[in-house]
Length: 428
Ligand code: ACO
Image (cartoon, rainbow, N blue to C red; front, top):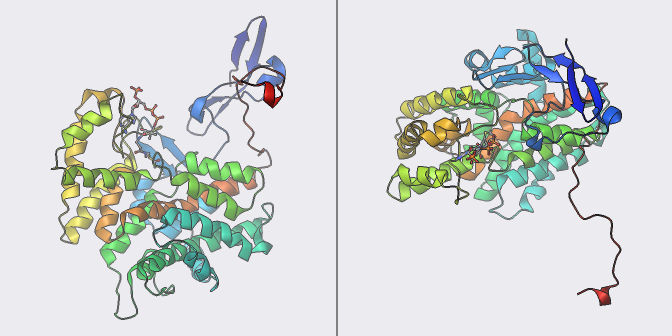
């Protein structure tokens, strides 16, 4: 590959380039500071690859997302969530026997230690589910001290399986605690999504049969959220893991990162925005005007993406699922009408066209979750359940990479220059 040349004052340095399997070229600046004394400034890492990764591929211009080479459209259509979780972590789709063994091992770990119930009960009833999930995920490390070594591949494997098995149970139990209902134990004869729905919505006083339309849609939603390159939460997982913190602490960091409204928290924010529009008479033009007003920090939630600049392939699939689920459940939701109108207005408005702002994954997902019966503040934990295999795969990729380094960015210091401390009685 040709080198890139950087010239600065009287110095010139040739920087090697590296090409990815889809032809993306990266300039390797690893020797830049040592040879020139220069550092780079790249806010939000918008141009910086921290790592090589083989987990997922995104082409933001063409609207492509693939996991380990497979288009998400095919995975969503042909696979179960656990099949995709296996693919992301181990690199290949499982055979039938491998999938059965994997599913069996996940069902062996779905229970929580009984004393973890006290943890849920220590939170206020109105605590946000993301904070509870992050805390409970951190707490898991205290129950499995023998499986925390980040350099032990067997420990990584068992901890990853425990997390995939237990996170839905933790989410459902935090909901049961909030509702004042008895905790429902995982039924291992059900598949992953149905088991989760059963833990969430069944009560001992009556029989609960998970709805197949809802379970299948949830399975697809989990798949569509399962990985997305070096996004904010995956980078948080890698950053914490780079210091060789244990996998539970690293995943808890990812959950915290996901909770922000500019990241996974946007699905909750979208629904609240749509509810506000309906409550104030359904006029979308005021909301669009606010989003365009540079004196107003408000943004159209569920619009825009750092990488996708034409369309988000997940959003297109999710819009279709929203229509199907509402249609099949025979429900009409005025929020879906408002969302479609908002999308139409925004997509024909120069402000959004010029800035290439399109609906993202979060724009329609909340409408589906609402139709399924989930409260609004649980939408982001559903995203977390889906994203978990991606976080685990990213963490594992880093933990097993002999070239991985602790994350330690530089900074351009712009603070005060050296000065002496004035005694307190002389300051004024
Ligand atoms: N509404 C109104 N204006 C917007 C929006 C929006 N949703 N998104 C970006 N813009 C504008 C910005 O004000 C800026 O305008 P300017 O050039 O006149 O200053 C321009 O578009 C570029 O915006 P940036 O913030 O620089 O774009 P960036 O790539 O850094 O941000 C982000 C991406 C954070 C997703 C942003 O589009 C946003 O805040 N969207 C709303 C929140 C959201 O939906 N987040 C979910 C993202 S998907 C995910 O994490 C799963």
